[in-house]
Length: 636
Image (cartoon, rainbow, N blue to C red):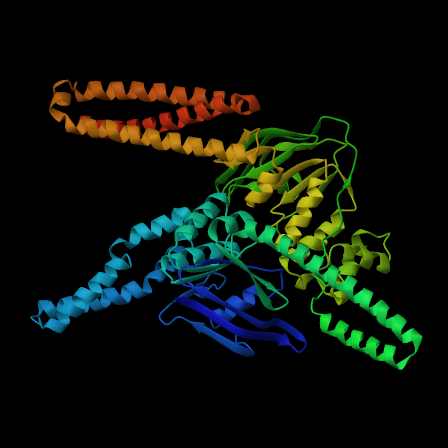
């Protein structure tokens, strides 16, 4: 069954600027499709047309009757008193209507109305209410909020007080809870940390409805879509596979079309030369034959020359570095609104290292980079940057000294030796051409501002590159360009990113910022993920073992009671065990810190962390036992 059918869709925003030019495609029910294309190709425009937010000039769109569409890029306006919890629960408006009608029918039946129509309606509504999770709303909300890292404190905040990214995340949760039939996800991972991205990835992959996804996250696309529709020149190209298939197949098609075009051009050139020579003989018969050949040539002009998107061609200029240590953090601590972001950090960066700084949103990653750059100050400790270190910094949120100036003037303001012509030539290397260079910087998209900032940075000689979410606003072509530039750069790299492809490609060391500390993993991202997966399996196994032990204890209460000492004695034993476990966890923390600094101790580190996790679970259970025993002994 077809869920979405789009026929010869045309949309333009101004005369001569056609965004969608005869776009046609159809989507079968249950398909998961990636919508690709360069920034400005019309992807978000298409989504807004599908939801009715935008009109179109001509063509036809058919949505299967009864199928409800949800678009994540839309953030509805809620009453000012709405908290995040209220917004999440607004997803159950349909359930509330069902519940109200069920209550009304219940009241009628209790008053003595028992005719068959009422009973039939009540049974039908009850089945639908249960189908939509009406009896378990709290569990559904908690599951989605936890998966998207929307914590209990955040759920109590006013929705209006959130940042744009936080609102997008909450709205995504609301959309998932609505049980929509057709999901339209427009860059859903842009404001998610790694944990939330992977949760959404699993949810999307298991979603039984229809999904259309606009994303530049190649890992996410590979794991969630089975077909790709690429928007190019206002029309659709189709690829029956995930992103990796699309990338290979697109190159294969280009090479095949290029080969066909060259063969065609060779034949056209040969025939054109023949016709030219016939005309030179200046006889009526040969003129006729030459005209006949020229008509044949016109009929042969079937294949347009295939064009690849122009690749940006610029790289980082490197400064020499002959020392060892480039930068060090000494006793660094920072607190925001009574929340300790990090405490007593002591780390150093040496020449040539490539460090990926990861952690949940709000953990303090961007703050740490700002402190390194001197944009913020620590509460305690200091950052030492050695004299030979030359830093270039690309922040997450771009700010320009003169947002009302155009691109040329902004570039000249930081590169005073450039003439206007040289500035335009340099901007062209970063895909800013024609009249675009005279736009005010403030009207540029996030991706365009990132490219402009890189244009300003890349002429500097550097040996330490610090990047905060460098790929967040870039399309896939631009991501590949910056990745190629970094590949050719041999200096040190410190970066924050949620782009797993980017992290996997460049990080040779992982700094995991969590609970105010950095755990240093001297290993690749792939090895780090493997280690974390092993830890999670070990932790789950430890939990399972504890559950089995408790279950066994409950099954043999009489035997346990006969051997049970007095409450006071049991309390003393519990306190001793708590002391032993607290000391054990402290020792394990020290061992983990020592072991994690050595790549060769990978297996040992993994085992130590698993031991600590199991000990912590046991300690938490003992704390609960202590509270119960204290109450029983009358000591609380």
